[in-house]
Length: 371
Image (cartoon, rainbow, N blue to C red):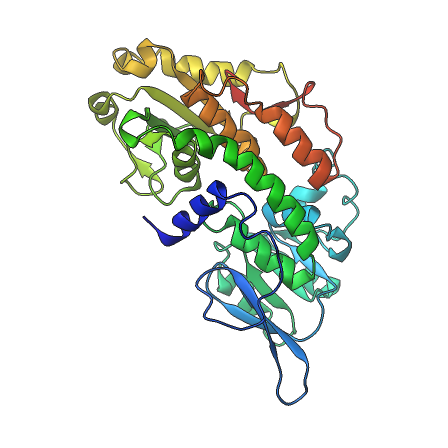
């Protein structure tokens, strides 16, 4: 088992482990995202060494005061860490969504990570840009050489690095206390599922065909090992029948029939939204019905027993994936054991306490079907 997954499981099983956050005093060899401190022998200044999710380490001698987050996950974590006062520019996704990102519509628009306005970035004069590991250096870093702008990469969507990424960023921004409060909440939510799975052997966990539509309308695409949806499914207690495929793989109907999954889950982008009324489910219902009526799958157990479920991209982005999508997956997998688990309630608490949003999820939010 991967060492980072082992670490994550230990944290789930032992409440409070790793929650006393501070930058480590000795710069040991950092194996993953993290941070440590040292002292410059010449000036006597304290130096922060921040390691991001690519393994890159940057040294900082001065506080970060101006930030541009280039993806929505980074923006969301900055809200969690009470650090939005440092933001000086945002992406088009933030500007265009006043419902979920109120108050940032008049900020400088720097485009988005695949179509960056470098001129606007320079106008904003940031100390730091936060982006994901999929942003290529040739599209960003190489164009900022000589500007004094630092770039760090965190994904904030992988279970094995999520906690370490938050700790690393918190140290970078001197927001350790906010991170400690949030991670205490995070581990409390995860423990509810972890404690159940500890009692269920691997050979008794349901088999799942995880189908993915990334917006192109294609069927028989799946998420294999290395994809965030696979990680969520595994953490929720499901066995991905295509776990050994490529993270984005095309498969055949015949292979699904042969492996005969007990459950089918369909990942759809886009289909719902947090600002939709809760009962606006027609699109998700239609997607589920299209699976249930596929002739070639008529004798697959998941279809025969109508254990077919659909979840939308919005339930998987930012912090939502851990309190909303993962919890809902677990309820689909173990409806009897987790009948009292309430993913919406936990997510609404997250929105209020860590995102500063008063969104009534009894009224809003189309995330999955059937719920």
